[in-house]
Length: 361
Image (cartoon, rainbow, N blue to C red; front, side, top):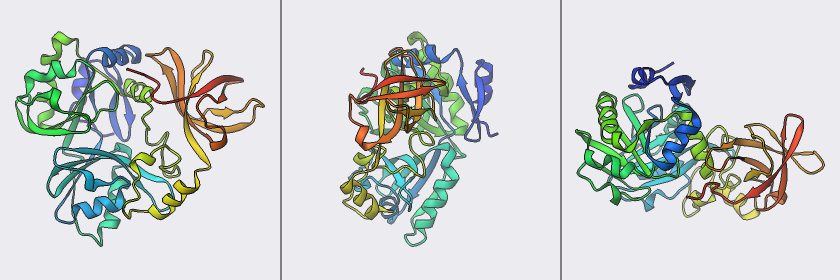
């Protein structure tokens, strides 16, 4: 198991550590519900340094990014970020990612921890003919997510940059907590506002300490990955390995909005055809009508008890106090308001298909 630069600090704070994507990661400190509530109402800090970072540079950088990603990266500008996915050759998704334009010919790709090697190999394969400069910075960089409605106010003393001016999916490279050239980015995964801080492993302990000093009067707390999962699920954000994977297409996963057919990219022709003809199945969001907790891989059935789909993510929503989930069903039964049933042990619990997000701020 790999450790992040902050693993010893997490141990001292009493975190429950679990293996995740090859890393020892803090899953919780005080408990999921308390940590979830901290981010929804105050400010909390996640160590997500296990994420991967690739630097793509040079005159051919944009050509490579346009080839491997589904969104239109030509719409980026320095200081802007973009959510995208990398389609594979067979209709599925290699990974979802965020692309940051750092300089005129320099981009940072942030990928999921469990996919670092797979993603690197996939991009490298297409770079053979394009020859952009590629550097894998994953082992050298740390990432903190400072999330919650009090994040701006709590962190403002640590930087000269006006944090309230950093809009969603934009970023600044600036001094933060006494460290120069830190990426301060508003690309959160919780739906409660805040920032991500990208810095070197050698700098992150200092930043962590100063973040907690600055946030003390705001009730700042460390937050584990379990609450990160319940927070993202309340927003309906896809999790790679659950809701999207090598066999799910961006179209059926509801990622048509980041799949732009104004350019040629990996498998774009087949995906355009799928978009025109419609997918056979669709990723839907549902709320349970009765008490119960839907879990990953539970069966979705119809009124006759016949299996029609599978739950990809599910939890008891701490904000709404009801069972919520995502799952794939045939397109014919995917409309908002449609009744489905979730097989929880021996009981089929009724549920209603709803519009995302579950959590309305």
